[in-house]
Length: 601
Image (cartoon, rainbow, N blue to C red; front, side, top):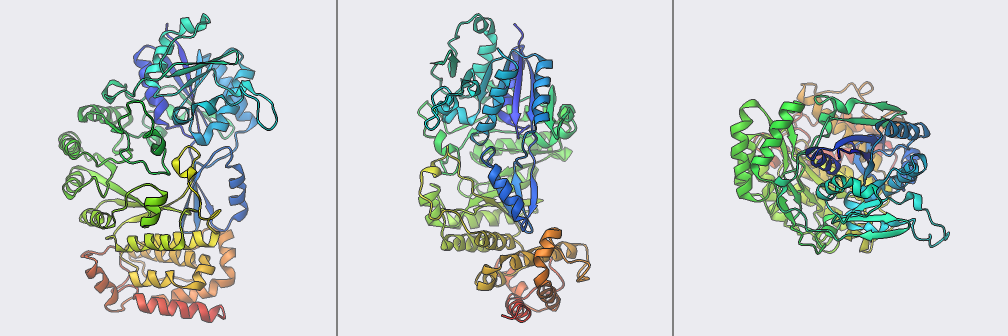
């Protein structure tokens, strides 16, 4: 029997899991259509728009997001816009038009409340249409998927309509396909004994034990993109994901592996790696299988650059070197490039050299923290400081388009000295790299949730202060002494918006220097996040302008930056402003003088 399966995503149209399941269902003759409820959006809110930040935090009960502090703004991913009544109706109408046999809702722990709302809606609006849940939350905390069958401990009420009819507690390719192949058996009122599925019927739950994960990932079908897909957002239905060479390109990722050898407490693998089910921490597709998918995406989706979205791509040297050889044979001459992350323990210099040679144009290093205490006691991860520094040296040999160093910030599990350890590590790493600061989100399903916080939350001014210092690292246009001096200034700690404005101005001047624009028209080019941020800075605008005017005098200053670049081994610093750039000692001293003078300190 050829069945119709409606796959529902929320705030994540590119979700890989349901796309792999859809590919497997297609191979076995079943039809799948995607219904994306809300798009995955990253929206930047000005740092000083406190009212909007507070409103988003109130909404975080429905969707947990990651806050990423950039100079002048906070980036929220996913940006949690409420599902409107009109969008709910459009969703129901689209489902009815497709007339599926079953609705599958792909979910994470951060969207479980939305999954409950949609499940209740489907049961009310389309009675008799079964709903199955799947995803990482169902694998690690399946019992919570049944909440609603039992009385609420506070109200004593039950809410069975929000409970799915079936829960998939393992990877979905095999059990979902077997269920649909035996659909006649299910609709006849029987409960098919499908390993890894829990069935809810009449308030009773029938559980079938899951099998070990499939060890050979080549046996899974390739994920499905741009076939039958609708997006429901902004109070309308959009078919833009059906264009194979259009918007869908932004949501295509390639995974060469599943799993992670580490069990960092903030990550879901801290839970998965403890599951006793014959689970192998790393399962990797064959190089040939990966190359087949790359070729398919080039032909069908016209991709020129691929994001290899593994937890750690550059691991298992034999596999990596075979991958590099095959990539060179098939894609290097056509200019096809890729992004892959390296690891200070698992990746060596030869691997970095070879990957860059064949087309790895972007890379990243996830250091998370420079604190030994935080790493070992809180994050359950090794910290090899010297190996991280050495990895930065391997990467700095090459002209990557982007080297991203990831740091977890805003952590209530860290002390001030831990943050300084992170700053010192970043300063010891060899530039050039870009620092991305991810605000810590503690998920209830992670091991970190079981650890004691050192404070309720990091104060706002502390968060901004350290984030801005981290953003100053990784470049060749601000000296170490300058950054250290700024980090020791108590006035900047109390008034981090001043430091944020400095970072904005320095980055703006740096980028303009690349275009040969070395000087400012102070009024015309005052850089602020937006009008609200500018108003926040207005009382101190003269201090900022004076600081910038004085900084112009450093163009041509002798010695300090060149000496530091030589010490750090930077032979070709990129984008220095003027001849000698900002002298660390002079800049720090005059910066403080300007601020003290103009703010009457």
